[in-house]
Length: 245
Image (cartoon, rainbow, N blue to C red):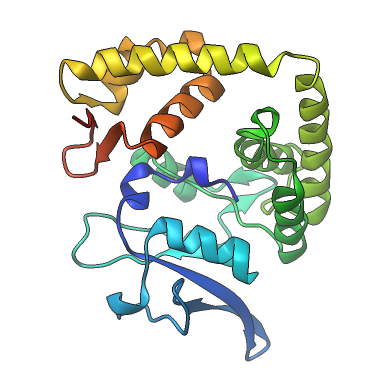
């Protein structure tokens, strides 16, 4: 699961559930579950949880996935585009919507593709060398699917993606992880200095912090470390990062 690709604005809201696949009328259906235990309901906030609780339940309880519940109290909207691809390319209307909204977009996965990728995700070594590999994987799968003229990520596509990720992991083993840690530490200090003068939007922080030069992996790892340590916070209302005093 590509948690890094999920917008921070959604992660910050306690509107998360887990789900299991149940067959109804011969079709698979996603049944919501409370990440804290028990059944979930899309119209009952008491059965929702935080993003962290949903991810923890996914790892511990073996549920099929997590989901965000849209509510009248939030400013977000979700659009489900069925049969939106032909020959690996989005139909005209789907392409127009994707371009117009310019936001978080996913390509559907078959159940075997999801299972293959999740097995790899939970069994991968936990080290600095595997950081962000799942993000790369979720970006690669749609590209490979489109390249083969598909409108859905299949088990074969997931297997090919994992082969590429494993190659990347072995390539990283030749690099010195201590050097990577030092680069991240220096970048964390740069972010601290930038936010010390006041809150910044994500775009301004990335521009002033020279994210393009440092690279996505190092930058996101530095942000993740600072947020986990409670040194910086993301305010979904102002859409700004702030230094915690």
